[in-house]
Image (cartoon, helix red, strand yellow):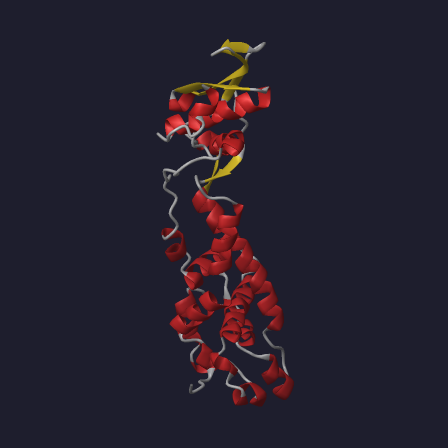
Amino acid sequence: MKMQNLNEHLDEVQEKIDYYFNNTDLLLQAFTRSSYSTQYGGENNEVLEFIGDKVLDFYVVKTIVDEFGFMKSQSEYYDKDNDNEEFCIVAHKNESDFTEIKKEIVSNKTLAKRIDYFGFAKFMYLGDSDIDNNVVTQEKVKADLFEAILGAIAIDIDWNADEIQNSVSTMLNIDKFLANIDTTEERPEKFKEENAVTTLKELAEHGICTKPEYDLSDGQVEQNGRLWWACTCTVKSWSVQKTGLADSKKAAKRYAAYLVLCEHYQLPDEFVEDNE
């Protein structure tokens, strides 16, 4: 790769990132590797890289939350009398899902591709050791440059939140990642009966249904010559009410929740023979 003098391309770089520096020395510093500063003096981009790494993490998380998070009162199933005003994320996604999404977005591979897209690697200031090792082609080096540019912007703009978010959005093209995230409700193949109460609770917390209501019988009831504990589970938004019979109160509640899930998602009750 033929290296070029950044000083001669400052306008080009700033136009591509949609940000014009008040102090272009910060932009020059962002492109300066430690090998260069060790050999020729001056500051390098390592501290800007550190700052940019934190800036990137914060604004990627914020963008994900803005896109996929909501307060429970925004759900069509919100019941102001029974539901707490809590923060939720879209259906069928959880913390681990978004952790993986964030990890992909801020990965060295992704950041390096963006530097390649902008054609910025050729403007880096490198010492002889970096030139000999051809580090300019390495993903990590390009990712460091990406983060250093963000760090330089944050310092130059005095941490103006709107400007920083615009720079992250422009440089990262994050909308491309978010557009590929499937948030549609999928029909499950089956539910685990032992997890039914928790599953139903989580669906309510994600705004997919109203909070389930449970009504446990005062005493055991007789059916088919046996005594059972009975629990009725009602989910008003689904217009579903089911009663579960079991040997214990806890099991009856669990089975009632399971029956509600099966009814709503039109799945067979795999335990019907056990309770007849």
